[in-house]
Length: 303
Image (cartoon, rainbow, N blue to C red):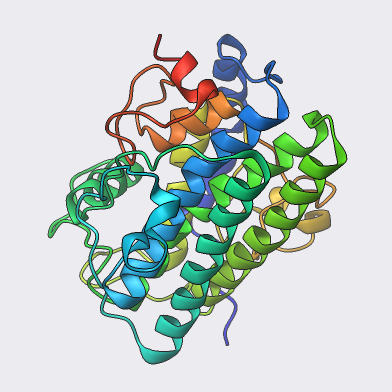
């Protein structure tokens, strides 16, 4: 495979570093006060999101068809449907969906669970997200379910948020059982994110039909948007980056997103809410969670 060249989006990504870092000073970026149970139940919101998107995208049916008891009576997602995937990708995404069901069960078994929040994984919601990422209205609107490439790009927008959330959670957990659970969840989430990024990297230089943007451009723009929404500096990087952001400053490839020492970035619950609500405000539900996320931590920002 030919190595993709550095995209112009990657250059803008680097230039925005100082601006985002300065802007982030006005936002809550440090650790929050919470007990282990509330921290893990906060993460359950992302697990619900990943479960419904993956399993429905692969099979056309969601959590209620496999383990309805885990939803605890929560509403069915908005807009979930089967994606037009190639056979190999479909099997990968199906496996991811089953893994997420296991994650939900592990959380409920260990600390108890909250009801599934209302999720919006409709084509229309993803179209709004991608419009915001690129900075203009895509024509036709982006459809995550249209084909394999689109679904992988939409998937790029989800698991990494949970991954960095778990990295930020582990140092603040008080007991061994909690740390063991979250470390185990993080291991699989990291694997999922690595697979998705590797699959996309193989397509990095390809144009995403019918847009005049490559796969790498889209990943850089999505990562840039998440940094902007979270407002706590650069903690997210696309597939192709300036040399200054590459591993040991020696490569522009960026299959795994990591800091200057190749350590994973970490995010706090307020940062995550700003991202998944889609508007940079942890107090204002929207995006993937039109009525807000569940649990004491998420609801505390709405009171």
